[in-house]
Amino acid sequence: FSGPFTDVVTTNLKLRNPSDRKVCFKVKTTAPRRYCVRPNSGIIDPGSSVIVSVMLQPFDYDPNEKSKHKFMVQTTYAPPNITDMEAVWKEAKPDELMDSKLRCVFEMPNENDKL
Image 1 (cartoon, rainbow, N blue to C red):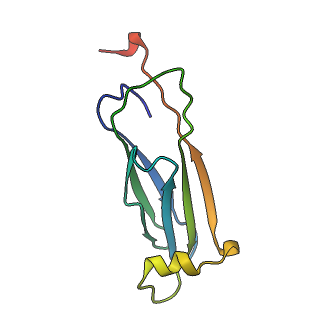
Image 2 (image 1 turned 135 degrees about the vertical axis):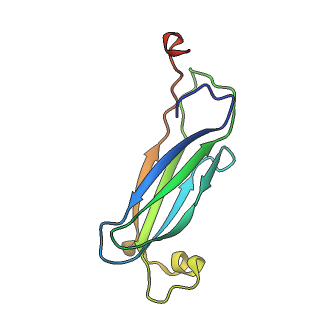
């Protein structure tokens, strides 16, 4: 995320499904009050991709504070005739889940970069 952080800062994640089966995804964060994630879950068709917008809410930036914010993108193959996304995640076995962890980095632009 690039500052200043006085307004909402949006970053996009592109999730791609290289498989030949539908994939369910879910995005989780360690700081749910600080971020708005849209869509935070869904289905990606085979060979398709989805753009997920991650919006960081305004806050007072402290360059000495190391960000401990993280995101986890969980995926699993979609069962046939899916109707209930919540049930998919409740019934998924740990060996059927794939997850990717992402750590947030906050950067302030240099004084020289400002217009």
